[in-house]
Length: 187
Image (tube, rainbow, N blue to C red; front, side, top):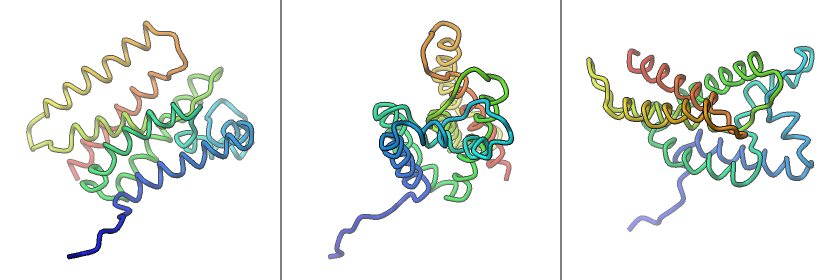
């Protein structure tokens, strides 16, 4: 009988979760300085070199433990099957692309607020997973339901709810997931 061992089965997803935890702990140790300086995207001068780090690094930052847990629970459930299907390199590319797009949207269109957290990545993965079983010439019913339930709910919340949640980032993440899913299916 083979001896059981712990397998680092999803390197991109697990590394993302661990890096996000490290960013959260570092933020606690520095009284929020690293969270604000490295892991939160906001309008800043283009001469500030941290502006470019924040453009992608904001997905690793979280406002607190509850925020981290809500994102990582979904990421750790949805991410490994996606990494297995598409490969580590492709999934990492999807994460970086979604981080950059959501960071640019925040930077360009919302100069008076800041953004941090992995919810855009999670929404990208939700939509991407709904496309995972797509067949030639067919639109998966799972995609239609995900768009209707998750993204539709975010659109309604964006109009009706006033909170600190960036519904637009969820929508942008979902759109990135749809675009990336269709693009990877073609390739």
